[in-house]
Image (tube, rainbow, N blue to C red; front, side, top):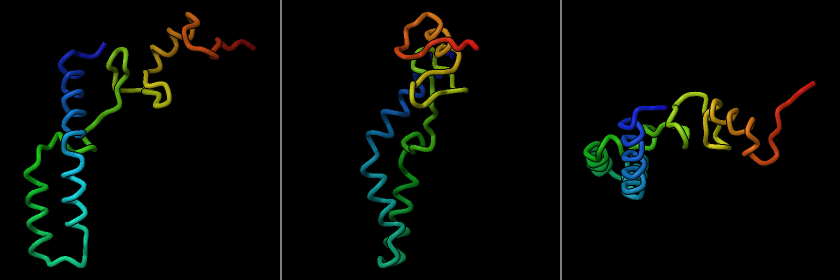
Length: 101
């Protein structure tokens, strides 16, 4: 199980990303618009830099919903391989059975 502080930090990042998404997208559109004057683009870049670092979507990490484990994460099921195997062995995931050949 991951540390509680890491899980809470991840939740905080998710909230910040959602909160600043529209503002960040608008500023990025201004900075990438070649038709705008250079001064306006530069000011937009400065405003973008003043936003909180954790509001950037690239700082998000995929984590297991059950344990908070950041590695070996299955996106489709939103859980780590370890929990996936435990739940599949207990028959808690529909359609997933232990293979045997």
